[in-house]
Length: 393
Ligand code: HEM
Image (cartoon, rainbow, N blue to C red; front, top):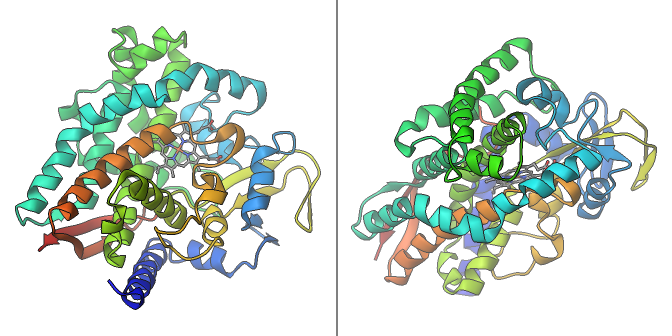
């Protein structure tokens, strides 16, 4: 591919991803885009931060900012999940629970688990593409995310279907940037879904350590703590990964750069750059708990801070998997500080597995292309409802 073709391919891929963001968030995305950076107070919304260094300042300052308080994650999730589920905790309590949960997400525990539970699905995608079939990668990613839920909840894989994925995405889909809490009816319907999963998790907790809830018991968590953690994993670790994989693959396929991810080092660069550009969870929320200065702006207790992570990540430059633009961001797309994504090793293992299957298809001399796509409307995270891939010689 010539340099000009490559530049055109990258520009096209970014335009298509931009179209997806606008289709999924026709109001919130243009609204945030219009806010001038690096930090600005927006009446009715909060203090919007669009700069990576300022975002890190907020995320690393546990004395100044919290996930508990007005407009932060606790307002959304405590009524649904209870008070002690990582995403709404703060300070020593939070650190202590993280320490106890750490072994669950160590790469050495997660990687074989992902290979075993998601490997056959990834191999089927590879086989079908090589056979000239059309494959819906978005549907595949939802099935894989469901298989991962099965693992987390202690369900039999067969008991988890697309309906369950839709129910979970339905919970996160209730969240709006302009509405910091869920309505009582929304809380009731979210709890109904999680309670039914909680029953399986409770049974698994009492069983042996082959399931995740059982292992949490082995790690010394009480049943309530274990079920809370499982609920948080379900809400944070399902839609994120199902949205991320098709978006990253679409960027690489649309730009014709998938084949640049030939070796392991190229694949790692492509994944980091894909995560940087897509930033699957576009926004993080905090509540200010002590007076601070963020950039040129004074903030006071009670101020809601909206970190537009996607904007901070993109400020490093356009999407280019051959660049090292992602390196300086220290994985800001997974957060920073005390609440850094605990599921990152699981997410990375899932992305690597999917990408490895497509890299092998490209290594056979075919080119993986996107032949049709539909945005997933009504979801919290920008993603595809349908992403049809084909491999052509
Ligand atoms: C590409 C996929 C993913 C992305 C981009 C992502 C992103 C993030 C981000 C940005 C945060 C920090 C939020 C904040 O500080 O406000 C976070 C936290 C978290 N993530 Fe992920 N995540 C992904 C996948 C997963 C998976 C697969 C799990 C599996 C369980 C997971 C579980 C969690 C949990 C439990 C937290 C809360 C940690 C805490 O508050 O201490 N995530 N994630």
